[in-house]
Length: 310
Image 1 (cartoon, rainbow, N blue to C red):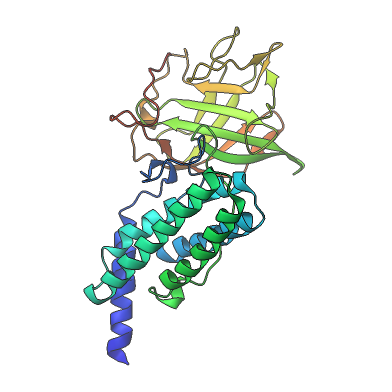
Image 2 (image 1 turned 90 degrees about the vertical axis):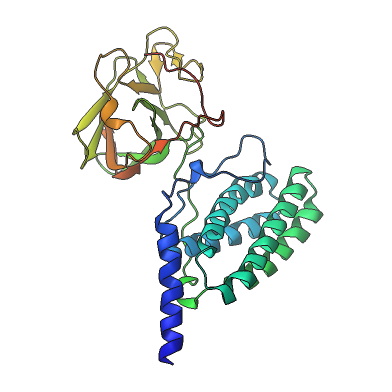
C-alpha cells in the first residue's frame, strides 16, 4: 500500500512540476487547428493540475451540451478553450512514468482526433455530425480522465471568459452601490508596456459604454513598480485603437490608452513575465481586483505585429 501511495504521489508531483513551468496564458498557446474564424481562447490556462482538470470537466461538458443543442457558435467558442486546456495536459503527460505515459499519450491522441472531428463538423454546420462527434468526444474524455489520479480530476470550474475579443483581460464593473454596470477589456502589450482599454455594456465588448472624451480611467496595481496608471483618449478626432478602428461617437468614447502622448515612461509594464492584480475605476464605477498579464507579441508574425503610435 505504501509503495502505491508513493507512486501516486510521485506521479502527481511530477505533473505539477511540468505544469508549473507554464505561464498560464491561454492566448499564448499555439494550436494545431485553425477552425472558427475570429475565435480564440478566452480563458486562463491554470497551472495547477487539479484546477486544470476542473476546467477540462467544465468546458468539455459545455461543448457537449452546446453540440447536442446544435449551437454551432457556442461550440466554436468553447471548443477553442477546451483545445487550449487539453494542450496543456499534453505537456503535463511528458513527466509521467513510462508505464502510464504510453497509454495516456494514446488517449490524448484520441482526444485530439475527436476534437478535430467535432471542429470539422461544426465548421461545416453539420449538426448531426456535430452531435455524433460530441458523443465520441465524451467517450474518449472518460478514458483520458481515467489515466489520472481521481483526487485531481473531480472538480468542476465555472465556465466564464477571462480574455476579451482584443486578447486583453476581461472584467466586469459596478457602481459604488454594487449595481452591475458593464464590462471592460484591459490589454497590456508586452513589448512596450502600453495599455489599451475598452468599456462596454456586454462581455463581448460589442456595445460601447461611452464616456465624455475628457474622462480619465485609473488602473491601480498591487505589488507592481508603480501604484497606478491614468488612461486617456488617444485623440479627439477618431480616437483609433491600435488596429485602426475609430472609437469616437459625438464627442464620447469607450476607448482609452496609456501612456499615449503623456511622455510617461511605461517600461515598468513591459515584458512577457509581467503579472499583477489590478483594479480599474472611473467616475462612480470600479472593478474588483483581477489579474493583468500581457498580450504576447510574437516575432514570427502571429498575433499583432503593428507599430505602436504614441
